[in-house]
Image 1: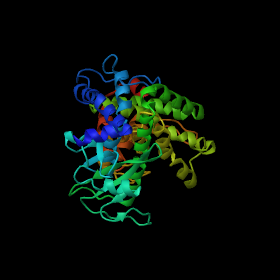
Image 2: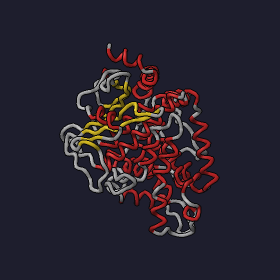
Image 3: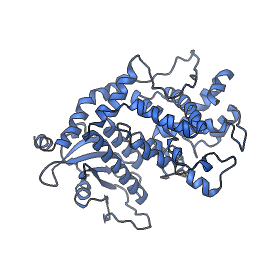
Image 4: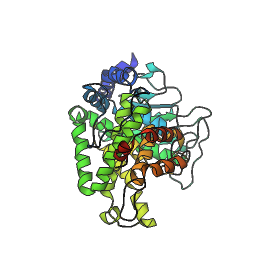
Length: 409
């Protein structure tokens, strides 16, 4: 009963746990009971016409329920994204109660026992206490986290934690653990964990202020998309097309409804960071110089920052950030590879490429859909996820020509 006393002792930690427990049945229903299903084999697959951002609607009335549940579950989804991005089997968010530093409670988790929620410090996550005490990330081995220029090799069976601040002070920690045989955690990944910890703090601050309960996520998304349209109509039209193609690919991959919702938001918002790109670069009537490309390459990070500011969409921000990562690890901004790139980001990456290849630009003509499909197939296993490429390649080649025009618009 210790955790009950701890939660009762801290209003902010109680809010996090109560909100999680209240909507947990909704997540289970969305993730397990209601799943996307592909059309029968004898039924033609259609790419819907592009009319802008729309929510997935496999059953009447579902989008609103998913949206409300998703906003309340942002912290839980963010912990799942953290485990994926860091290649960790376990991840958890802990908040501190009153009294001893060791009085922490799990408010969101991935990879732990189901009954870990609401319990105290999990085995193997002791570094969370160090991060709480010192107010900075910690890792095994290595003690206090510093910022040398070389990568820190943490070895196998590594663990790391970063402090999480909201309401003006350090009140929790985000912890990951990679068991024996897992990929090593590098310094660049610790820095990414630190950014994810700051994002978790934003989610908890939004929740403390009850922003999540009053937020109109759909309106916020539409305002962002309208701002993108005003800044660059081409980017806006391109995002519409990526949404259509990504939704279609997600359906063929049988994503559950929560993942499908994340995919559609990621597709709609993947280029929102281009609002911060100088117009002379964004609208350049020629191929970009190396220096200009380095500026353009900042847009996933800028998009991450913009989306993170929308209450309830904090867990979508890392997906936007990762849409230019490559399967072989040669992408940006974090050099993630393979399964460590979240699936929605991998889908958007391939759909983004098809949209870009088939669109006319001032400095080059767009390709045909056939050439675009051949190009992503050529880059399968290097730039793109082979599974995603296989779905797009097989599906697009089966579509009649009039629907290909919609997909390539």
